[in-house]
Each structure stands twice: as structure tokens, then as C-alpha cells.
Image (cartoon, rainbow, N blue to C red; front, side):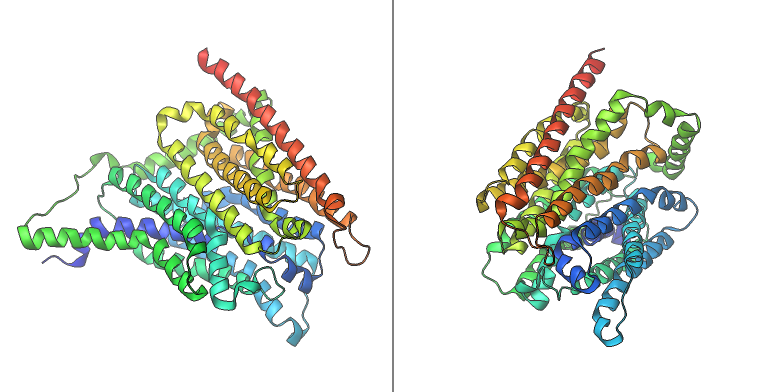
Length: 512
């Protein structure tokens, strides 16, 4: 009988794929600002505008992803992971400790220190994402782009997973309360635990695996996981602790598949003496060198002055503004769900967060199919235009007081945000008409902090301006949120019109 490592071509790909997906699920921490505003406000005494600045600091840190990408060419993969985990531990861990021991030691962080900690926490996501990409390249040599797109979709229901854990540990009423510091602890500890396990699995290289068969199967598992986590699980008659257990088991389905595949191979060998080995793929040789060559080409494009020509093109600015008025505006809405709940007098914040996670996850998942199917990539502009069309209506629906409108709008905005994000990431070079360099990615990504600064400031300022002078409480539904949603809907409508213009330009370009 062979040693267990003799079956690594069967079990390790699934274990590593599951590890990447889990790490991405624990790494999507944008939800924390919506979940912990009351906590942050109580201990730091900051306003809504200042909270929006914390989100901007976190998103601005992601523009430095080129640093982790550059470091990945000179440092081992495990060191990239450790740097990301250290940054995350500092960013979230220090805030957790300061809040826990606030009364005992009377220690207060200054606003500038809080901004720095959130900047560090945001930058940790870049390093962890780079590590996941390195692991995917090392183990899935031909399908690493599709694998990363699929794994990244798991970040869509990070809020659902963390919320379920908190409800199981502390109770449902904790969400949004001034005692929800455990969110900071989980955001610090959970990625570290999963990342270290994945690093140990990655010590053994996968020599050959049937990548073409794995991806469709994993796509089905991801969809089934999302259906259970966001549709079935909320309606199960289980205690909060059992819900946590059931959710963990469903999220770990790739690990179950690894065991089943290995068991199937053992049965074939023991009973019938059949040993099925994947066909070796000689084309894998030299792949890492090819990837490094591609990165050098991207850098040379920047050196040739391609960036200056890029920012002078109409298509680039259309693409930039569409991204800002679509994906970024949707992110602002999802980051302000606590404000939305206050404005509408809605007390089920956890259910609304689950709704946003559900829609964001499936928006990403179904757009992964788009990036997988190469033949329809040329229709990226059409897809973005069609997805953006219902988003202005969703914002205008929020003006009403119906909870049904709130659910529908959150679902539409979340789905559109996730879908456009994946499509644009997969088709950036088509939109801007040139290969994507690190500088190009940074320029395009700058729309996120700029958009959050503008759109988020508008919401926070309107909320405070309509409040009482000392309590800052919203003065009624018609005075407070009507202006915010009207302006957001108008911005989304402008983005939809711009997407139609870009669609016409891209169609004319393809016809020529």
C-alpha cells in the first residue's frame, strides 16, 4: 500500500482549493464597519463622517497591492502570508484590545491612530490575496485565474459567516450593539488559523491534477454552499450554536470531497486493483517563468509611456466612472446598512446583512461563469449595461417605507455590485484597450476610495445635518433619507447612461 502522500494528486488539490476559498471567506472584512458602528462610536466618539473616513483609509490601502505583488517575486509565499496576517492582527487586534481594556486602563486611541490601524488592516487583505494567487498558480497551473475568481466569490458572504459565529457565541441581539468587539477578534484570529493550515498544505506540491474537471464541480459546490448559507440556514429551526456547526460543515464541503475522492481511489485499488492516474501535463513546465515574463511586460508597458496615453482616452474615463457609479456606489450602500436600518426604523439588521451577503455572493458566483466562458468575454460591455439598468430603480425604491422595498433593493444592489466587480476585473484589458499593468490597476482601483469618500460623505453629512444638535438622531423618514437615496439613484442612473455609451463604442470598435 502506498503512503498517504502517494494519493496527494487526489486529496491535496481539493484541500488546497477549499483552503483558498475559506481564507477568502474570512478575508472579506468590509462588513465590519456596518456591524460595529455603535461600538466604534461608543469607544472612539467619532461621527458618521469620520467613520466614512475609516472606510476610505481601509480602501486606500488596497491601492498598494502592487507592493505585495512585487514582493511575491522576491520572497517565499509563506512570508507573504505572514506579513498579511501580521498586518491584520495589528489592524484589528490592537483595536480589540483597546476596546476590551478601555475602562481598566483608560487608554484612548487618537483619531489619527484609528485611521492608521484601519489602513494597515485594509492593506493586509492585499497580502493575503497575493498569497492565495501564488498558491493557485503553484497548484492549478492552467486554471488559476478561474480558481481565484471562484474563491474570491466566497468573500461575498463573509458578513454572513462572521454574523452567524457572533450570534452563536454571544446571541442574536449582539449585532450592532456596543458590545460587539468580538467582530474585531474574529477578523484577527480566523484568517490566521486558516492561513497557517493552508500554508502547511502548500508545503507539498501537487504534481498533476485534473483541473478541467475540478472547476465545474467546485462551481456547483460553491452555489450549493451559498444557497444553504443564505437561503436555507436562516429558516432552519436550529439553535444559534447548531447553526454555526451546520454552516461550518457546509463551507467545508471541498474537504469532504477530498476525502471521498481519495476513498474512491483506495476502493478501486483494493477491490479491483485499478489505479487511475491523471495524465501528466508537460505544458506546465516553465509556467512560473511565463508569469514573471508577463509581469515584466506589464511593467515595460508603463515605462513606455502607455499610462499617459491611457488616461487621455474616452473609453478609459467611461470605464472609470461606470466602475465608480456602479460597484463603488453599491459598496457604499452595503457599508451603510446600519444607517439604512436607523433611517427606516428597521431592527433586523442581521437579516438585512444576510440579504446583502446572499446577493453579493451570487452576483460574484454567476459572474465567475462569465469569466470562465471565454467566448462571451467580448460581451462584457453588454453585460455591465444590463446589470446596471435595475440599480437606479433599486435606489429610488428605498425612498418608500416598505420593508419589502428594502429587501428587494438590497438584493438588486448587492447582486449588481458583485457581478459588475467580477466582470470588470476579468475584462479590464478589453475595456481600456491595452494590457493591464500594476500602474493601470492602481489608477482604476482609485475610484473605490474616491467614490466612498464622495458618496459616503454625502450620506453621513445628510444624516448628521438632519439630526438634533447634540444627539445626531435622524429627524423622521421624509427629512432624512429621501435626499440620500434620490442622489444615489441619480448617480446610479448617470452610471447606467455611461455604460450604454461605452456599450455603443465597444460595439462599433468590434464591428470594425
